[in-house]
Length: 563
Image (tube, rainbow, N blue to C red; front, side):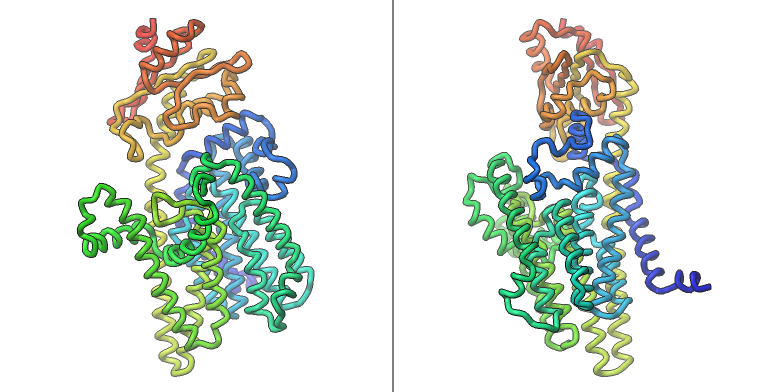
């Protein structure tokens, strides 16, 4: 009987409801497939053939400093090595971790507000928020962003336990959890500021700044070590660092500008799906800046400049509303202040990243911020209920009911956006799996030193008119991974990311094995003319018919043209 009553505790019911909602929202992920970076990580695992595949380029010192995201990379290696081409282990890991993050959000908010229902609503917002859903819909983020947030939240939860009990064991394990989170990903780095803030806001024993720094000196030293190591790494990457601030720009000026602008624009963006903001930006530009309607960069202006302007205004409006609540609800002032600071600070780890194509950062970068957004919703409800108590029970019920209805509608709409995106991913995944399975059916065995020629009549994919097949990375590299078990693929080519770039072509040999891939027939012919050792029997020709999504064997035709 005691077990049954324990099972029916409201906490357990909330846990179960959150799990059901997460499964309902994200269950379609089991039908998705590798997108882009997943092929690279699997190629490295296959090429190195060891559980230490992702760590060969780093020293022990670099690994201890978080380079290579050692813990997340190790989990990825295990999944890739023992479950190749399977998304289920990644998705299951992601959903369980996301659920645990929701439970920790619930526990933290419940501890602050002493209200389980507000804690549940906050956790519900976190579990269903759309703008951070990229951390779950992109497989490569499953083993880094999600556990990074898990151990960050655990460190916060344990530190609250320390503040309540003054037992040093909770502080010690809080520090351990924080450092573990950094070994998954550096996104939790801002916690070095959160620790003193937790003391200042929630600790009844006030301390000066020097004492706070001394108290948390261990994490300060480790984070300084990590930041220096990461800066050296980014500087060495330079112009090849992709979206990172490059050495060709004024690095510190760019970082300072990002530090000032990213938290302001991203604060409101955490709550608003990018599609909605871009639609509003389009209308706003059409009305207020009509002279730009015919500009060749009209779309870019909408999604970057105009969206930044609107995001800034929306952030100011949200802060004004929260400021009013802070003024009239003394009881929830600490919670409101903590939530706002948490959300602002959560974007600081990304100031070394450029966002040249959108006002928004990549969706996965909002994952930790979504905890702050969820807590802000909880603080809002707590403050509204507190204000209602001062007047009458009826007003309190009305305000609380209205707030709950708004939150539930907000969560439902976000869930719809997420499920819609996943459905689109399933369509793309089906095309890719169908393509690869047709290739394997046509050629279950490949010749020694194979050379693939792939073409098609598709009008294009992902906005690229000359991309004739549904893959967004170098298909030559994809084919090497796909046919790895044949024993005819040079490991060195996988380890060196040969043919990884989207339009990369060529042929190489390593240690008695070879592989080639070509998009253009003229380049294939030139390769044969320049290398007399190549034979027509090495060539496999494929044609993708976009209208029917069929892969056709044109090998004989191509071999004849090469004679």
